[in-house]
Each structure stands twice: as structure tokens, then as C-alpha cells.
Length: 419
Ligand code: AMP
Image (cartoon, rainbow, N blue to C red; front, side, top):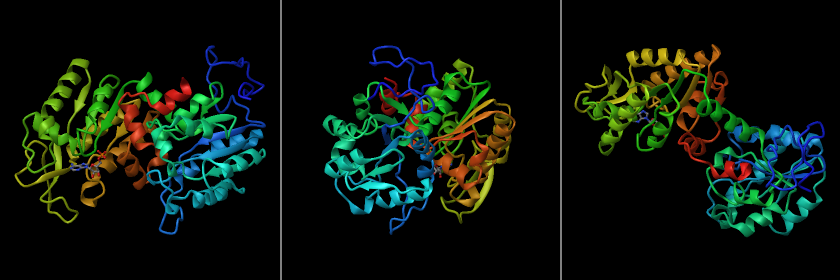
């Protein structure tokens, strides 16, 4: 069943085993006619108290993959987690309302199995006809999912003929449905469109980027971004550091940071990164001025000052106008841009100007032909909040997964399909 998946129009030879060097299957080179595709998707959508989906972007993001399978004449068995039920059945975390919402997005009925394994799933999967969609109940109702249990993975695998992984958000987890299940599809496993787009986008930034390539890293702490910074030093020409983490760099260079967030135990790490940047010829941009406040609050008194002369009792909560100007110039001179982490406490109005300005600069550079990737958490929230997402080349859907990818780690969910 697994060896006749390729589109007839391609000239690629079908590999009977994975020991031969056949190119990987892709969505476009795969013909799903008559096949049941077992698709790991990310339907972990936010819901209100009644189970109504409040943000359906993740569900929308898988529609293209599902529609390709169906239009080929295949059927789709969708599996996902929702929330953190911790291995126990929790009706509040049922995927049923999400399946109902997906039916609206797909414009066709969606069947639902009350468990992801067992008699109901097996019978419904077996009876699935070409063009039909089945959603399985929350995978994490079973502790075996997060444990990456092999027998559970095998049971899941028996539901389909071909495995498609389209859940980038969980690609950094070696769970049963994201990773282990792939081994039961040695010649019939591939990435969905969404996953492929994430991989391609990171490739454009970390693979062989158009130069100059500028990385912008912000957010609260250096500690959560050390590996990202170290890895980016190997690929970028310019590195912009903003957000709370910039204070640690300012202090490491001898500046006065007042009551700003500083990680005292990472001053040496910051110095090491500064040295490494010098050695690698990477131009490092640290804020030269800041918007400061006398409290961590929207209603605090605010002022502006040099980033290395923050008065006692005051804290830097955003980058200042001179830093914005310098960062903007670097961004506009770039052909490739990666942005991870906000420049300030953008959730509070008085401290969002830096993040807005950088988002606008990235959008402007993109309009001029640069490739831009925004990924890994709060910078994604920021570009969405400021309505700029459609002006960025690619906005990643995976927070933790993107962060680990940017750290240079091999994501198990990706390796399992490539292997
Ligand atoms: P991260 O999750 O590490 O990307 O950090 C994002 C958080 O960093 C956001 O919630 C911001 O409010 C916060 N942040 C950004 N700049 C600062 C700053 N100067 N001081 C304290 N927190 C900040």
C-alpha cells in the first residue's frame, strides 16, 4: 500500500524500501487517490468556556493539506492534541467542537471518533470513503502519546496508509503521533504544506541566506535565548539585541541599568557573545537609549535616557528613538531578516513604540524584496496585534518548536519524516 503514492506525472522511481536513495515525498508529488492519510495536525486552538473556537488560525492553516488529499481522491484521518489533559479523559478538552468548526472551514461534514484508538476509531477509519474526513479524539487523553509509546504509535499507524506530519508546533516533541508513528510508514511519510513552509522558511534564513542577513532578538531574558544567539552568530551579518535581555548586555559593557531586568549571573555569557560576534565579524547592535519607567506598570511615570545611564529606581522597558533609528537602518539594508522577541514590554501602550517601529521596518524591508521570518513566540503576537502579519514573508506558527529550530537543534518530528 505504501509504495504507489507518487503522482503518475513525476519521473521519480518508487522506492520499495527506505534503504534506497529515493527523494522524499512531498504534498505536490504525492497522489493520495484511494489512500487513507493519517495526518498529525495542530488543532490546539483557543476556546471559550462553551468550547467555541475563539481563534481558528491553526485550523485554517491545515485546510490546504486536507483539501489536497481529498481532491486527489483520498481521505483524511486527522489527529491532534488539545490542551494539557495529562493522560486522562477530560471532556472540557474534547476535539469534538473543533471538528465541528473544521467542518465549516472545509465546507463539508467531518466525522468524529470518540477516542483516537480502539474500536470506534478503527471502525470509522476502516469505513472512511474517498473525500471524507475523520477527526480523532484528543491524543493526550492517553499518557502513551506524550511518552512516545511504541505500541500506541503502532496502533495509530494502523488507521492509515500514509503518514503526513503537518503539526510544526509539536515538531520538537518526540511524541507518539509526532515522531514515533513515522517509523511504521518507512516509504509513505511526508510533510504537509504548513510544515514544509516552516522548514523552507528557516532554510532561507539559516541555510544559505541572501546577504546581508540581520537577526533581531528580543524578549525578556538572555537565559532563554543563549543558544539562539550562539547559533545565529554563525549565520547572520548583523545582530540586533533588544527587549529586557538587552539590559544584561548594557550592564556587561559597564553601563548603569537602574532597576531594569538584568540577569547578573549571565554578565559573563553576554561578554562572551560580544567577543564571539567580534571574532566572527558580526555587527552587534545594542540599544543606546531607552524608554524608562519608575514602575513596571502601564500607569508608571516615564522618561527617556541613555541605555547605559538609567537612574536608580527606574527601569528600561522599551528601546528609545536613537536605537529605533539605528536598528531601522540595519533592517532596511538587509536582504534576509529573522525576528524573534519584542523590543520592549509591548503589551503596555507606553512601551510598545520600539516593537511597532521594528515591525514596520521589517515590513518595509520585505516590501523592498527582503525575505523576512518572524518566529518563536511574542514577536508573532506583536506582528498580529499591530496588523502587519501579511507584510512579513513568513510568520511561524510554532513558538517552542521555532525557538529550538533557531537554536540549531534537530527537531525529532522533522527527523522522523526525513529519516
Ligand atoms: P520572551 O518570551 O522571552 O520572548 O519575552 C517576551 C516578553 O518580554 C514580553 O512579555 C515582554 O513584555 C517582555 N519584555 C520585553 N522587553 C522587556 C523589558 N525591557 N523589560 C522587561 N520585560 C520585557
